Image (cartoon, rainbow, N blue to C red; front, side, top):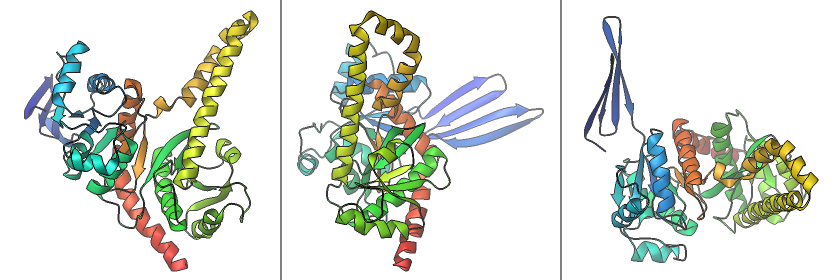
Length: 374
């Protein structure tokens, strides 16, 4: 980033110094000044299965949109692929991190043997206040381990949780945990509910998001021992607790937030993705098998396009890791440039809505309220 940059157009003047923007506009005989900070989002250049090309392509497009993105990764490899893509004339912001965490690496081992990996370097920049969010499509376990180790947990949170934004009837829903904590205690689910409710409130502009507890039946008393023990905690939490929800209630759009242990949540998400793919594949097969079906498809193409877009995980790009002292977004390893762009846009929206301050406040209020009632 340049130390000082001037932009001038007629009576408007913008000065960029470091991460501060000072803009001014002439109004009559007066000049009005406005000072703003540039919010930097880190994109892990060595994250996706096909790194670093999807990350480079995403950074180029985001830069055109005016987004301040810093690529963190092996500078030599990034530059090499930038040339391969014919984009070496574009001045991308790169922060060198020579070590690479592969998808097959074990989290603790990779942190010890590869201390200068892109995840660790990027998260340290967030910790030091030099960046506002971290986005990766890399090894989920390594991203989780590095985030918890470097950024630390939020006060009052025992276990950070991974989220997914899933499509439900007429809207979206926050689902957590999607795999970070396979084994949970009841109080963990309460923490997930508080964090998920705060996130949904900001994301969907909903004052009191409805929170559901994933179970095998709607009635109170249904579910395994974990669900039965978590139920009264959520009832006393002060949250807008809907009660137990089965998958049919989730997809009917009855709740804004669904909480589950990481094992059940991961199975739920993967099953949903598999069924969605199966439906789309069956539709394609059915359409291509008959002439009349092809004509029908052409007439209904807008509806099919809308359905495909709604079910496409690239539209969201990544899930946020809630419960650490910083904004961390983790996407699929198979993310392409479009998915990474969506992830960075989600990160930007989350920064702008001031999630972290609200999260700290809600955790203290809701968890202490539950303890008092307990």
